[in-house]
Image 1 (cartoon, one colour):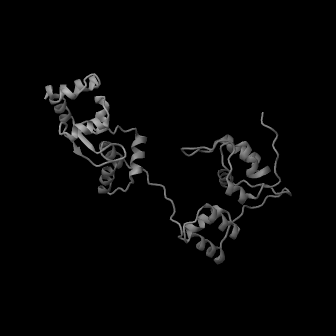
Image 2: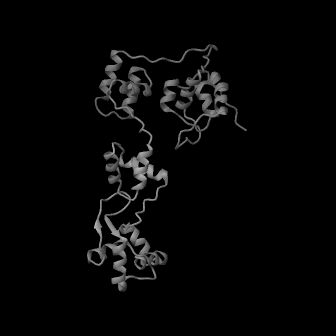
Image 3: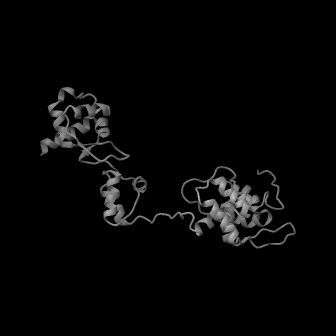
Length: 277
């Protein structure tokens, strides 16, 4: 059973300080956006008029103060003051003096403490100061990337085995602008297999042959195993080794290959290709 809760007459340190601190009861939500449930909204309707954000925090573990404040604003809920009267939510305005202080603060690269000091100086919430800085053109606004189109997904899926930089250039050639990080994240979310069916890199070949990558590099440096230098990416190494060259290496250098360590199913499949051709 939940312990008895103390209903504050007003927000503990004022709503501005509470939102700047942005506390969360319990463990905060991580990952995808969390939608408000009917039960949570019912709790807001019950407890926000009585005790504001401070009281709602105790009944909504995992919800931050700012998320509660924003939601009650969308729902049109208001909190009663000490006299039991409902007041309108604060509408923050600016003037030349406030803008001058914000401009002076954001001329450099202010950290969180500097922005908080600016907010205290102009008697405004920190979130409002940051928003005003964007409006004044002092900070570049953050824009969410546009949804991936079917054409973009088709390009990266069909060429998933290629280096991320190559995928970025392929997209750019078709008029799409995506960062390498965005491409990697999208491929992971799609669960796309990035293995090249016709070529191996050093790590992949080492895994199926039961050796380490240094051994593969040694075979290449001695000229026993043919390989091409490829564009480096975060997912593989420099080497691009064709199945045909791997098959030729095994046939002509069987003395240095420990058959006991090689993946036997992969080996049979590789050698069977030569017979079939």
